[in-house]
Image (cartoon, rainbow, N blue to C red; front, side, top):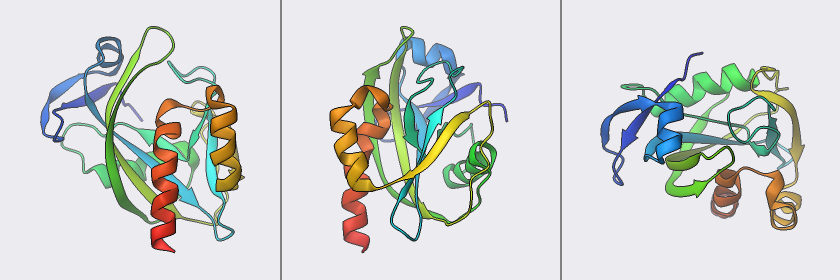
Length: 174
């Protein structure tokens, strides 16, 4: 699944063009992204450890799936396709919220994303793609909330930023 480009956007998520993914991360250009957070019937959240060969965030823990929709792709459809590709999962997801963040990451790169966050539920067993995921687990949100504070360097920036908002949404939903 080729994801070598990103959609550049303004702060209102209006598409302005596209750029090579690595170039956008070198320049810190604002671009569209999505993040999927999945829960099971026990209330545990699916997290995965990014493959160590990723261009950034290798070996870090993050939400079930995250990527960049391509030009003229429906964001939700793109997210569902990527979830199938990365984690071997199919389930319903619903848009929860969006947020913008800007953060330097390793290798001289800058994450500057307009991130669309989706939440879903599944009890299915993940079958992760080895080029994307080196490990996964179902974790208690209470554990994650504390562990992200105690061991923030074990998690991706966007996961640390979105986690509290996702958990607040879960309280509203339940």
